[in-house]
Length: 441
Image 1 (cartoon, rainbow, N blue to C red):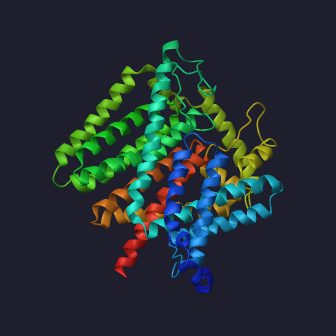
Image 2 (image 1 turned 90 degrees about the vertical axis):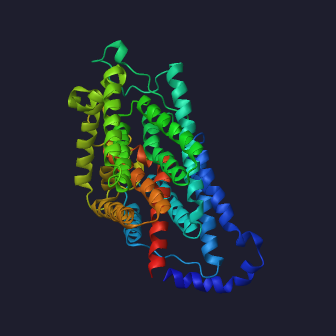
Image 3 (image 1 turned 180 degrees about the vertical axis):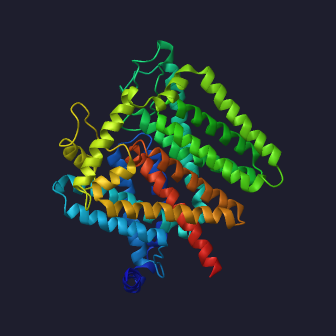
């Protein structure tokens, strides 16, 4: 239906398109805005980042309306996403705090619109994927250098989320937070989880092209980012980092297991020994890792358990349509359910957050989108023979998996710095799979 409408407008505006250099080169402007979204995310506020993204969405809409033969060809997982968006609209209409929910809805619209923009841009510009991954990798590298320097500068603590009551002074770590707004070590940790796969993906691409100098530089920046990730003290990002390395190992096994099994296993063993040695030698990080298993004895863990219990009760009372999307809306309603002294900005679990905000059907649609997209991506990795495309899809799949696992214990996923990376990774999977299906047909 929409494609018929677009065809009608394209025919009517064909003269305008043929006589406008700007309209004929909209892709270049959209590409610049996509890159600027990532560059601005390191130092600018959420409002500015979102405004830039909205401009890209607007220009994409203009492009589809005026460019001859341009149309949308959704995949099955994108139909799940469309269902999710429609349910969010219904949830908004039924929210008791409509004005607050409307603000949250506009954020959701911006994120999903950005996904459509990137996916539609990459459909005919697959050669720009390395540049987009490069922009993400550049920002991650910048944050890793800043965070690494903050550790040696002994920056002042900006949160009290580290329980020091059971720690010796030498086990208390300086939690770095980079430049991302708002300054938060958990946000920086989540940002690394989302972006570090881009660095490893570029490294693999350079190795495939036999550009060894760039590969060495990229892998050094990747491991510096991993080190800084641990310096954030974000325990959820530690788990996400483990997922990244497991994902990299799984993809490498596809190419190395047959001919280089001994070398592959030696590399895995070396990594395990290195991680174990680091935990033994570095007391603050060891204490931070072990606090994951302290359960209620750690105040941060106990806080999350209390939030989970209250959020589950919120979901039970609003299971059909939720309370309305948005963290401000969540905080207002949460006040009716929270335990005294345990105020929270979110549910600290992205799936529970989705269910609370938009109801059970929104959760099912979101899970359908994630599972179907990852299934298609993994199937492509296993069956395709195109090395560069495998690297791109692997980068995206690993990043998304790591974000989802990290999201089980935190909700920094909903911050724009991480959201825009997530939707870009999803767009990369979408564009490559679509192109493969087009070639087969």
